[in-house]
Amino acid sequence: MADRRLQVFHTVARLLSFTKAAESLHMTQPAVTFQVRQLEEYFNTRLFDRTHNRISLTEAGERVYGYADKIFALYAEMENSVRDLTGEVSGVLLLGASTTIAEYMLPALLGDFKAKYPEVSIRLQVANTDGIVSMVENNTIDLGVVEAPVSNKNLVVENCRMDRMVLIVPPGHKLAKKKSVPITELLKHPYICREEGSGTREVMLEAMNMAGATPQDLNIVMELGSPEAVKGAVEAGMGLSILSRATIDKELKLGSLVAVELDQPVERPFSFVHQKQKFRLRAMEKLLDFARHYCKEHP
Image (tube, rainbow, N blue to C red; front, side, top):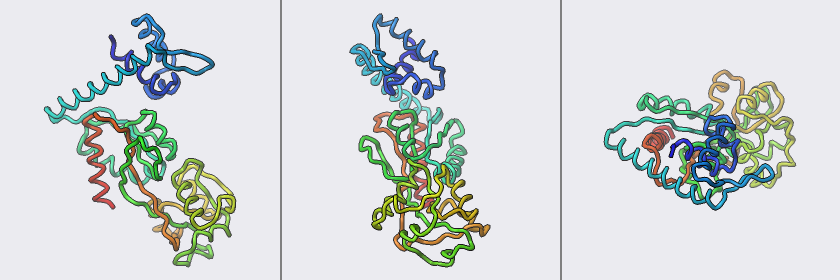
């Protein structure tokens, strides 16, 4: 039986979507459908029920999926065993990172990793925290790096470092000379907010709730999808915002933004998120070990 057919079937069964499977496998949807039909012809039975634009596994499909899980776990175990013997570290790793981490933390980490393990290819997808956690849940990426707490207890979450949030204002703003302000000070000013699903937004709103305010109390004048866009809007005098201190080094040096501390520190974890898989590719284990060491060296 061709490996490719089983791999394609396994991805469709896991995601319960031909479209998502095609995106995950970098194939066209007709090609995915063809591979699944080839497998159904091999077994001479349907593996999926297709009704009202939704699919579900048939009883035969459930059995094939269960065995496929075991087969791919054995493949990973075999590959790790041989690579342990030869010392080779290679392969393709699919990573996902939330926007702040992808722009300000990962370039240095991945650059150092690639210098040590040049045979490992890394593909990075960028989304907000909710999107990255969803990709990990669906097994469309091997490892996620996110900037907000993860509630799914079925995932492994390893904290890398704590990230401090600060209020950012343009240099001429009346708060620019303050050493610190309460977070409720934001209620008096136009606010530039990150989009729904962003870890930055989630942490900021949680801090507001802790201070007795609600999102409805904020005067949100813009919602933007990246730290760079938020910084640009604040520099233009369109409002204030809260961002990671790690994202504003360049602007502080140029004097285009001022960071004001919050009187009650607001912090959030940068965390690695992955599935509880018994066997992982050797390259994945090396990346996790490298990342853990990197976090200790760069607190």
